[in-house]
Image 1 (tube, helix red, strand yellow):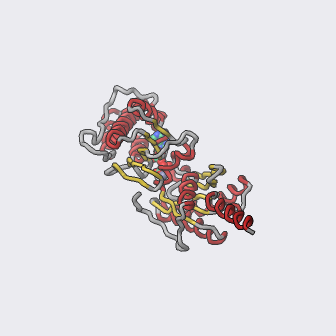
Image 2 (cartoon, rainbow, N blue to C red):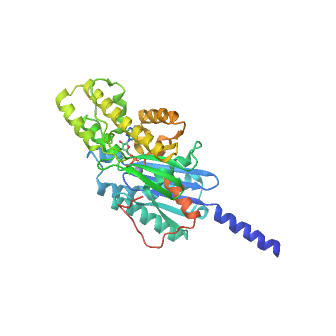
Image 3 (cartoon, rainbow, N blue to C red):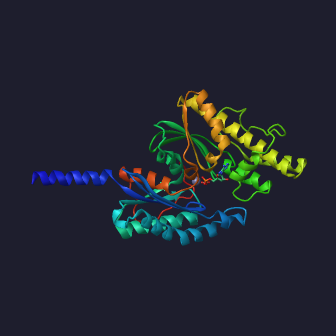
Length: 349
Ligand code: KG4
Ligand code: ZN
């Protein structure tokens, strides 16, 4: 009898410390679903990108995004379960992005996640999209120990965060206007590149002359860790108007713009390292896929005798894996979302 009850306790204990969590990401224009197992790690990950649909309009159309998430999320979950040979019975929880993001898009993921959790008798938890980005690097084999400084550079956000531990985040600086990815996309559009143009701008910048144009490095003459990128975009517009519209000029502008962004971000990250004394850096978010940014950060951090970590490019951009991972940690810590479907389109970190 005694033996049985201790066996029950051990089983119960393992049930609590081991979890398989379905993560759902629908905050913007990517439908991402994934399953994270607290023991095995990531066991499945699927993404459907709406980029082609929005490209026609030169940016994300919120209503179209919501409708497409609605069409794609459930079929993607079904495929994920089939591919991982799992059923609802094998899951221990469901996590979904509850903000920030487009309200309609968030509502689709939250409604589906919360309803499935209710139907399957599982706990649910809402995850902050930016926390997902900050922790995405933890899905890699090469991952940092806490504490670290994270530079989060995406289409909607630009911030420097002191990540002391899971759940303990201090924002050190943010953009006062455009996000870095937004500035990349707007400059790319000016240069005639398709939406979202960040990666395409990086490609043409490879042919650009680094000495033909010099773009300003915004906010570097002021102390602190705030960013501003709207001026760079205006500088690109003016340069383009004066210099003409041939292929080499477009490449030269792309190069000058990218160099200015990379140098500005590198200097701000160095300041953050020096200010906090933490010399472990993580670069997260879609712009983190930029190779010049990675090179610049690597070289700066080496000089600071620290280490820099990058999630793989597919985990820099929006994905369900980072939500499954962050959600799993929250569920293991006992966090639970009530039955109401709640989204927080403008929630701060
Ligand atoms: O993290 P993300 O997928 O979406 C948001 O949460 O915003 O980031 C998308 C952003 C877009 O602005 C895109 O142009 C940019 O990341 N991006 C890049 C590169 N790849 C994606 N920007 C510069 N260089 C790249 N290689
Ligand atoms: Zn994102």
